[in-house]
Amino acid sequence: MELKEYRAQISDLESLPYMLKGLHNHFTPQVQGYFVMGLKIGFIGLGIMGKPMSKNLIRAGHELVVYDVIDAPIRELEKAGALAAHSSKEVAEKSDLVISMLPDSPDVEKAALGPAGIFEGIKKGSTYVDMSTISPVTSRKLAEVAKTRGIGVLDAPVSGGEKGAIEGTLTIMVGGAREVFDGCLPVLQAMGKNVVYCGGVGSGQVVKACNQILVAGVLEAASEALVLGTKAGVDPETVLKVISGGYAMRVLDARGPLILKGDFRPGFKTRLHYKDLGIALAAGSEYGVPLPVTGLIHEMMGAMKVWGRGEYDHSGIITVLQELAKVETKK
Ligand code: NAD
Image 1 (spheres, helix red, strand yellow):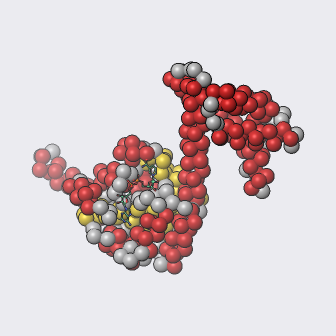
Image 2: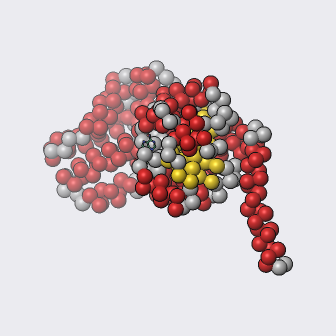
C-alpha cells in the first residue's frame, strides 16, 4: 500500500469518532456509551486532581473545554490542546458532557447553580458529572434541579490521590441513574481503573464518605500505635513493619463477609480484645501517651461485655453501632 493511501485511511479512522458524535444525541444513554469517543467534554476545576484527570481525557481522544477561577492551569491545559472558557456557563454551552472537580459543596453549588454557572449554559439532554467529594445532600439537590431541566446527573467522587489521577488509575464511586452511568462509563474509564456503580443519586458520595471514615480511622489508629511504640522504647520502623504486615491490614477481608451475614461466632473474642486494649491504655498511661480512639473502642467493647456479648467475635463491635443507629447491616 502506498504511504499516501495508508495516511488517507488513518485520517478517515480519526474522523470516525466525530462522525459518530453527530449521531450520538439520537440514541439512548446506554447506546450513547458506545459513541463517546471524541465527545466535547467540559471540565471545571483544574487543581491537583482536575488537571491530570482532564489531561487523561485529552489523551483518550476527547475535545476539552476547561475553566478554573485561576488562570495558570487553564493556560497549561490550553497547551495540552484544550479550549479555554471564561466561565462555567461557557463550558456548559460548548460541551456535550460537563465534569466538575471542585473543593467542597459550596463551590459545586456556586459553579452549578450560581451566576454564569453550569445550569445557565447546559443543553437539555446533556449530562453533568460532579467528581468532587461533597455532601450527598448537595448532590441530591443538584439532581433535583437537573431533573426539571432534562439533564442527566451523576455524582462520581474518586479515591487514589494525585498519583491515581495522573496515572488514570482512580477508583470512581458513581451514583445516579443506571442508564446515565452506562452512557458515561467509557469517559470515566479514561480517568479511573475501578469504576463502581453504587446506586441512585448521592450513592457515590455516601460510599466515598464511608471510605474516608476507614482511611482516617486506619491512619489515626496507626498513629496511636506508632506514638505508643516509640515512647515505650521500640523503634517506630519496627512497629510499622509489624503492624502493616499483620492481621490489621487483612481484617476486613477476613471478617467483612461474616459481618454482612451477622455471624459473630468468635475467631477472637471481644472480651480478650477488651483486655488487650486495656493493656495498651495502661502502657499509654505509664509512658505518657494519650490514646483517644483506643480509649473509645475499649469503652465500646466494655459495653459489649455488659450486654452479654463478650464471647462475640471482636467484629461484633458493629452491633453497638447498629443499635445506636437502629439499622441492620445484615444482608
Ligand atoms: P484543589 O484545591 O487542588 O483544586 C480545586 C480547583 O478548583 C482549584 O484549581 C480551584 O481554583 C478551582 N475552583 C474552586 N472554585 C471554583 C469555581 N467556582 N469555579 C471554577 N474553579 C474553581 O483540590 P483537589 O485536590 O484537586 O481536590 C478536588 C476534589 O477532589 C475535592 O473535593 C477533594 O476532596 C477531592 N479529592 C482529592 C484528592 C487528593 O488527593 N487531592 C483525592 C481524592 C479526592
